[in-house]
Image 1 (cartoon, rainbow, N blue to C red):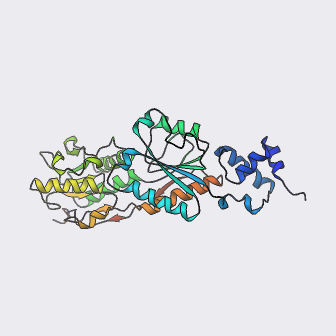
Image 2 (cartoon, rainbow, N blue to C red; image 1 turned 180 degrees about the horizontal axis):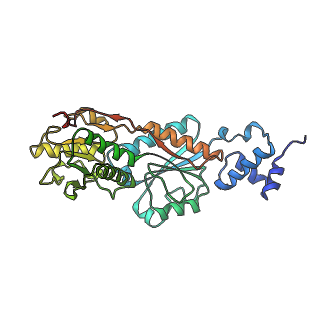
Image 3 (cartoon, one colour; image 1 turned 30 degrees about the horizontal axis):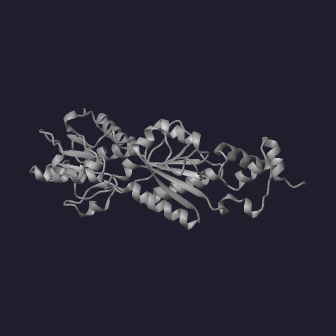
Length: 334
């Protein structure tokens, strides 16, 4: 049987032999769709290339785009995921360029340098970007894309995140099981779709319990403003518990409640998200959900590798263990 050549694949697809070689070797300048068609055709024809044709052996150039507003937050998620991704790339001999995206660049649909003049093999998007910017990025860079901490609805992008809707539901259901019926929400639903999903999960749990949400029990506060407990607007009529969008918000609320003469958890219970290091050292220690930054980076890196092998289209949800500590009172037992 005659050996299948690069030219055979090129003839099948109407491409040049150079383009086929670039696709098989994972080189830049080839769109994700073209790379997928080349890989599928090579497999169908039984192509057996040399060792150099294996894309996983080629040093690659990746970009990590992080909107500045997320780097400026203090919960550490984006910084830690960035660190773990850089370690994974370095281990495999790949390059990772970390690029901060300003709000001005995002609104003007401008790529941060050197994206405007250098082709990358893959791009990680760490933190939610606006739809028009994502579409512009797909048009200007023929690179594989993986979104982290959000999931674009209409874009050829893999995504890695936690199920924030389910987390909000589980946090609220836990408080309900502990006998709480007056439950508020602390956070800014406009900050990101992750926070909004947690809020919707909170609403679902209340609705299923037959409890209407109280607007006065929804405290609007962002992570980047949470280091000022004196600025937290506490309601006059206090609920018995709050679902907080993050551990940082929970800590800020805890301090604000203490300043107002309220005890946690005797008067007000708190549940956060992230399992940040501060959780175990507050008084009382915070009940929360573990969001493992290393696992997020590993899953994103694996998604990128799959896209390189023309096996993209994944939406990955990572599990988040519940960590019960001392910030929730059991009212059902009293």
